[in-house]
Amino acid sequence: MKVRGKHAILSFVLLVTGFILAVSYELTNERQAELNPGYEREWRHEDQLRSQIIMEQTANLKLQEDLRTYQAEIRALEEDLSMQDEEQEVLTANLLEDLERLRKLVGNVEVKGPGIEISLEDASYVPEGANVNDYIVHEVHIQEVVHELYVSGAEAIAVNGYRLSHQSYIQCAGPVIMVDGNVSQAPFVITAIGDSEKLEASLGIIGGVKDKLLNDEISVRVQRKDVIKLDPYLTERG
Image (cartoon, rainbow, N blue to C red; front, side, top):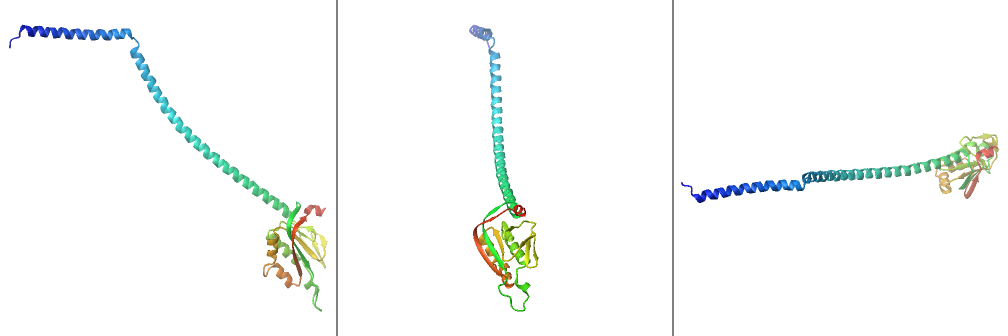
């Protein structure tokens, strides 16, 4: 195939044109670099800043999650402490109530309130030839009444005005009764502070203390009282 003159000229023109474009592109890049010498450096710096911002945002999200977790734990602890405080208050109130009740039982404090009064008297009639001792009030009769009253929730008890304590003793001494060494004669009045209805009902149970006293020919009288006042045991002892 023969190469014609116009083909050779066209090829030369294309070659020169390509060379000119290449040189122009190179010159353009060099010119851009001369005009903006920090362009590439700024781009890299901005890229680093963007990466740093993304990392800080991720860290902030993690911290927020941790904060919510800690706040939930704090609320749980506060609720537990609040419950413990309430339980402690209830426990303290119960202890104080028990302490006050013990003080009343041992007779260390004055006690005032509703209650009942039980009068025990010797039998008004003794059959001829009968043993008189079988028709009078003995220590065991008083002890049974006192025990039943304590079991039924009596807060304080006195016998003929003598306040009883946890160390009190009741014993016969011939025709009289000794209450902690204090002579007491019939009729014997046992005073008890507490729920009057409950105390009276406990004595009146069928086959209970009252029935036993009546079977022993003891005269029994029970009265409810709106207000009874008993002085401390130590005051009475002087």
